[in-house]
Image 1 (tube, protein in one colour):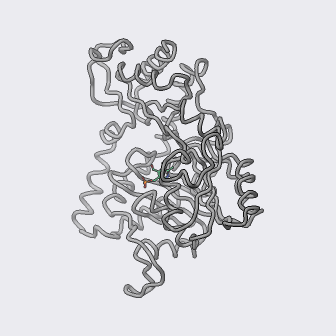
Image 2: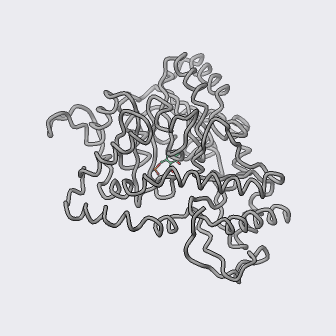
Image 3: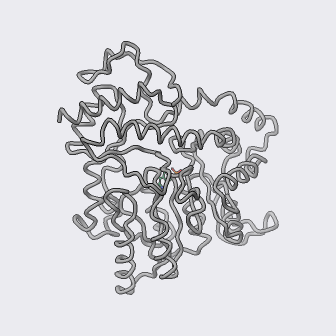
Length: 398
Ligand SMILES: Cc1ncc(COP(=O)(O)O)c(C=O)c1O
């Protein structure tokens, strides 16, 4: 594991204070630590952009897209302005609109659900599996049947989410998609860099969306995202959508589009960071192993899928008395976060798309117990050990 910079004093760490006098800062997502390690490769990349001045669709966009296709093992990658736009652009290209049902897990970030609604379609919330936290294929099949029976909406697409970096069950989901004749659009905002059955995320569904939000496994220094696909026609349509529906000629418009371009400066940053991603994911997995060794006998730790390498965007445990445990850890100077405190069907604007409390019981239970611990690829082992001990002490005290 690699070095964490910056020091903080242990004096203000309360009753769970970490033992040493000089304790490296407990960064939650390691953005500063990563910058310290990579700034010598990022700086010249940025300087090059300032010098050529092509801030919109500069040469770094194509360079990054080529590197991303190679990394993910797919034919096409298209840089976009955010992970949210990486969901909306393919849905626009796929013609998602009023009357369409888009199936997705209830336990996800809002962006997954807002996108179909913006296009006039309806999200259909599916429960998740209690151990992977990802969409439950059995409930997915049941929800598709229910929509078909009701006869109001047309099943149009499935949007699995690789929550916290663990790829969803793409074999089972793909089979359901094929059987029903509906598309799979993977929301891999949290899992770029992960793999399943030796295939990298990006190649596991017909089209995959990811986010380069700074705290994601591959993050830029602003907003950014991309899609991945082997379908050249779809990639071309998404490229058109990202520039206002532009056709082959500059002012010929083929379709309704967006301004959804990835920024050249962000592409330059990502080009500098991508070569480190695989080793960072290994380091995240090593940190997860270490946390497991401290915690797996006293709380639910993340499931390890022997057929996958998780990107560990987050390392989340399930604990009783979660809010109190979090409070104790805050007092001890250990940053934590709750992803997510409520499932989608409990969020006011989305209630109308759900069936109320009790209808998606696993998602509802997870929201009350989930707690994310500091996770990144630059944490020193002794710091991770101290966090593991502090979390254990906090759980035991509640
Ligand atoms: C599951 C999921 N989907 C979509 C998004 C949207 O990505 P962005 O913030 O880059 O628009 C995120 C980002 O947090 C996410 O976690």
